[in-house]
Length: 116
Length: 113
Image (cartoon, rainbow over all chains, first blue to last red; front, side):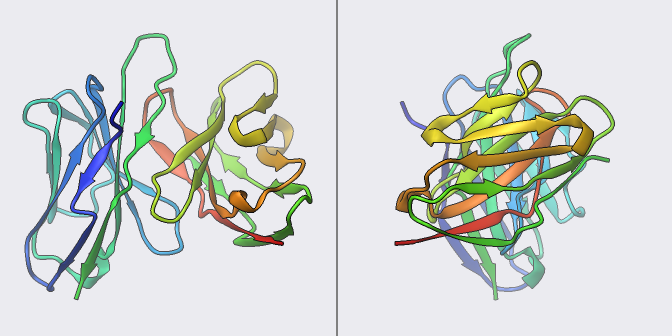
């Protein structure tokens, strides 16, 4: 079956611009996660959705970052007034939420964002 | 707060030799521990996980890891490395199954022919 997909795979933008990154989770997965991976580092948690609501957004670095998941499936990560420091690989993962079971996170290939 | 340390940034190993990647974690309760592998252009793939029970866990691709509570470690091992094992490896800790993960900085493995 299809895995987690992310579009675009690469995004180049200019400082100050607005960008949207899209994540299509595995069908039926109710949990969705965004992580950011800077060059040479491990992924860092940004936000976690359970269904349509953000259950934990403690990793969002500031109010320029926002994410939505209006229908509980596709999610969009939105970055306003991009800065050069936002350049990174943005990873999305999804998982099921079966009670009492381990819910493995399946990762997409990521979107590489470059802010010039 | 939970944290994960991978002391080795790079490791070079000859094909056929054994491999051990170190991981130390800091967490106040029983941790959920994971090892992921990331190949260029690929997403993160789960190699193995530890929740409880037997402290030696087996994963995919011939990897295993041992949980040592007294040392706060979860080291990854493979007896005989293949060229296809060249990749970046990440150790991660989670608060509970299905919740957010905290990753280490990663170890890049290079395999010499």
